Length: 428
Ligand code: FE2
Image (cartoon, rainbow, N blue to C red; front, side):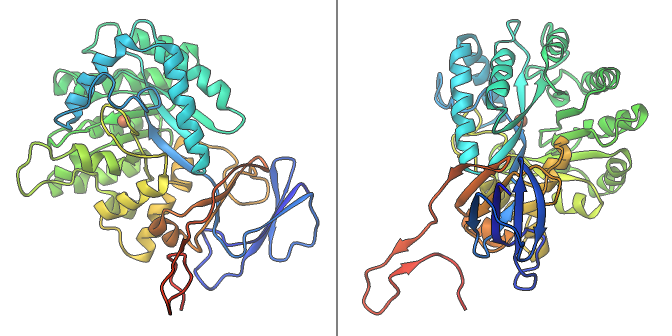
């Protein structure tokens, strides 16, 4: 074999009960997963009981805006709408070179964090389609080490911005993978619903997936998710449609949501929440109490709806923080949703790994024979500890090759009578 990872704890293992396994890799694929694998390899990595997970997957990001924080100025109000206005100020000054450079730098951070698949929206409300060209180039460059999927996103509104639908169609013709939308930003509720219908019909015609920014609003009457479900059902698009954000569901009437959740389940529409951004941007018009704004994640999971957590933004007009760390995203997600049981914390880990992979349609993903040999050795013993510590990515492997390493987080102490080192893990 090319590579064997010895003594790996998998995310599905029950803490302290399942014994570690060895993962044998040949030709960029996983060949065997079993205890005490009787084979030799050119290279061996001893995980020593550490958690080995398939890579992190970010189901919702904006690679065209990332790392532009402060250009040309900082978002003063911190609101979604000022962020959109600020992005509009920056757009005329974008160059392809700078877009590519920033996106490439972000992909370096992503790889270092074990994040090897990103679904990025790309703004198509620009006659030049500069960002589309730039991100298609980035997709080509990073392909050996990162799966980048692009969504044609009409940031300024499909019907509200002149020429947006034509631009979106051009972007798809150029090779963009997914149809996007932003119904809550159209001029009226009626226009929003019309945009959802037009985009779903176009996606059905083209045989493409759909992922819309949907109801990113505190307005409990923003119900475009209902139209998205109905159109998905009518056109038979179930399993390849996602509603991103869905923050209005936080503020909706409970009785209405009790009808909506089964509709989502029935139509096969997945949900992508973006905890860091939703907790930051929503509720800005509230005094106290302030709404959290994130969509109803535990209720969706209980209803059998597929849910992922996305990062959405890193150092851009909407958000000044972040470092491509999907464990930070899961950490915030479980706090905002109060998902604090062991099972719920593990579900938060799934939301940035397996669920996200399923929603964006990644193939051959997982730690199983036949899957791509893509995995991350974390400095943690289980998914909950990984989230708690935002654990170091000791080794990142893509198609059987090590592409990144990080040191474990350790601190040395010089206190008489106390240990010389701490690793922040509970030792009993
Ligand atoms: Fe977004």
